[in-house]
Length: 98
Image (cartoon, rainbow, N blue to C red; front, top):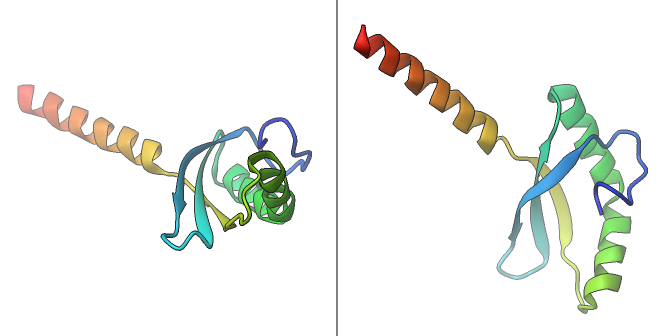
């Protein structure tokens, strides 16, 4: 839905990395990875937050459950953090060999 159906120009190429639902099912956190820098991430989150109503409506139509949780979108920085940690560990390992 994010890639093909939302026509908001603020939304960059992005994909869902994780969905965390509140135990009561009233809210959900959607973690998004965005291809781009901080400005693209900010714009994508703004576009997705503006489209929340449409996304909830479409989920209701497609899934058919009685209640669709309130959705909030967040940037998933885990891959960037993992890459940075690997880079630092690699530097440390190469320093140890010298």
